[in-house]
Figure 1 (cartoon, rainbow, N blue to C red):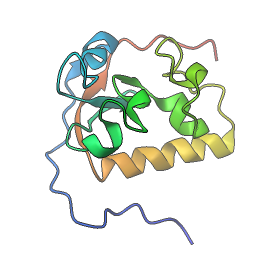
Figure 2 (spheres, helix red, strand yellow; figure 1 turned 60 degrees about the horizontal axis):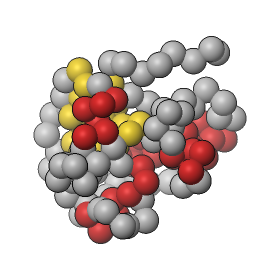
Figure 3 (cartoon, one colour; figure 1 turned 135 degrees about the vertical axis):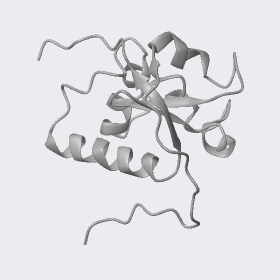
Figure 4 (tube, helix red, strand yellow; figure 1 turned 90 degrees about the vertical axis):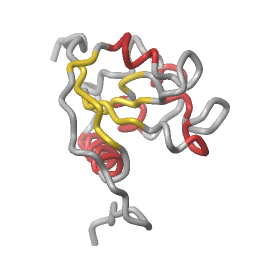
Length: 127
């Protein structure tokens, strides 16, 4: 049976935006320099600002905020080498199971958080 990604309570989301955003703009929304908290997954930027219990400063998933966290989400990892903004966006080394996990996270986020834009300056991978 496929997992259900539907939120327990309905979420009223805004239409997705395709505003061009840079990694630096996303980094500014880290909950510390600004109150906004954004997490990008595969270049799509989600606003998780309303969920301070999970993503706020000092909380379990704060390491994912302010960057494209594709690698960490795919690997289900909060290890420093996976959340390092220099490489956290690069999911080219993920195996098939990890890519499925990453896609599941994308679905999970897309049902709960507003999409505020798309990253336009992700480095290219050698793959």
